[in-house]
Length: 92
Image 1: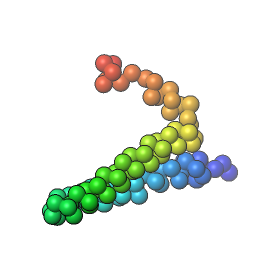
Image 2: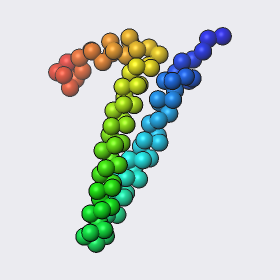
Image 3: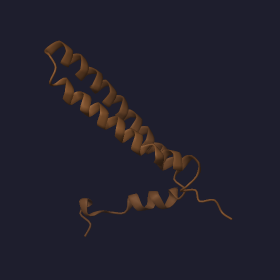
Image 4: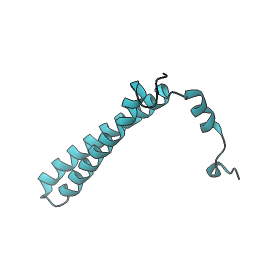
């Protein structure tokens, strides 16, 4: 019986990170929106906290993307697919 590398191991953990990271982004965006309803000083503090969190989240998502590539069970095929021209590149 072979192990499905898409369902177990490091790659699965990387894939499973997507939903929690999305939830964190949603919460920080809500915090940013709430900051707009507060007074000037309080709103600026809350906005700064939200932006700090979003910046850190961007870093975490970039690292997750790198881990996705590094742990992908079919990494060679993934890289070949990414090298193919797309419609956005002018391919028809």
